[in-house]
Length: 139
Image 1 (tube, rainbow, N blue to C red):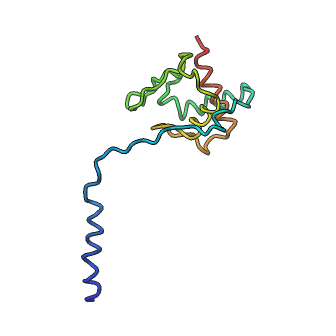
Image 2 (spheres, helix red, strand yellow):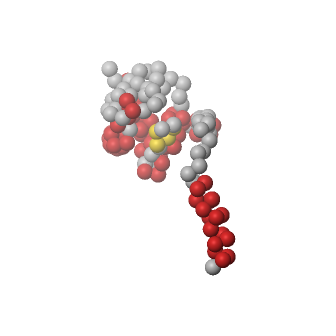
Image 3 (cartoon, rainbow, N blue to C red):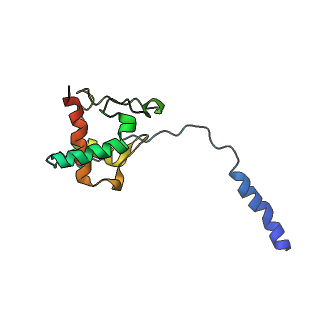
């Protein structure tokens, strides 16, 4: 019994550590970069009506809430996001971004955006790249 009483103060200190103030210095986000072998890829999927329909469905469930139904960045949650949403209807919004970069961002996420990960097959993600690029082609 005495042995247990000697250990109690140490256990109590460990428990209190969870309530002590942590460093208030803001965490610096890591720089975002797409691996070069992915960034250099071009879309290998030839778009089909069925593939684009599936991409529209996935986009509607997972992306439109922030990026907007037509890619304008005006989804319901966009106003609560800290990051400024791009208007993908503007042809300059994706200028300079490769297909591989878009694929990586859709699959892995970026900033507050979660990626599709394993929920979408690679061909679905490539079709989403085509879909997102198509927003600027509509007038």
